[in-house]
Amino acid sequence: MKEKKIQCKHCQAINQHYSFQCSLIRKPIVNKIETMSWEEYQKKKGNKKPSNPTKSYSIPKISKKQLSRLKGYGELRKEYMNSHKVCEAQIQGCTGRSESIHHLKGRDGDNLFKHFIAICNHCHEKIERMGSEVYELGFKIKRTED
Image (cartoon, rainbow, N blue to C red; front, side):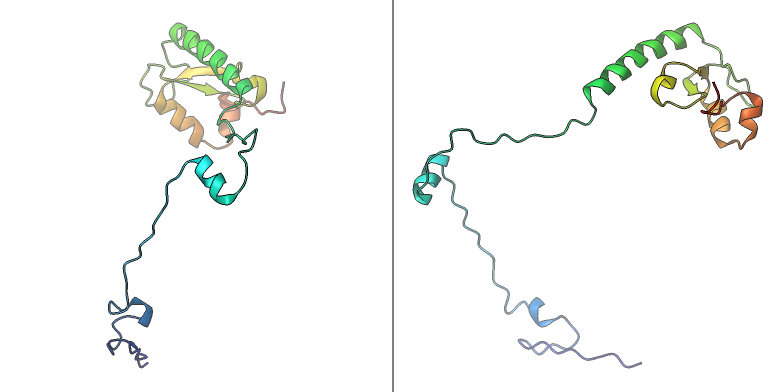
């Protein structure tokens, strides 16, 4: 298949660039930005300053309610980890020292504060990668069960 020849209108270069990219026609873009105060702008525009200018508002990343829940959970987690220094799962290859919390029933709603065990990172990784046998071993509880 033959390559299509494209010739620049300005410098007659073939297959080098498109016409709008030619260095012969490029001119430096100069943007002159005027800096002025709000009052100067309004005088120029001919309007008065608004009495209540709108404030910018950003949505918080974490709601106040969730922030208080996480604070309570942090205290509970710290207390639980201090009282359970040994891994509670003890799966083959276990390091023996508890390093993280595993939620048996997920972290939704009140499950954030109950149904959890202190385990090492190795056991946590194994539990998360296991299939349906985790329910039989007791490392996970179905959310529909009480």
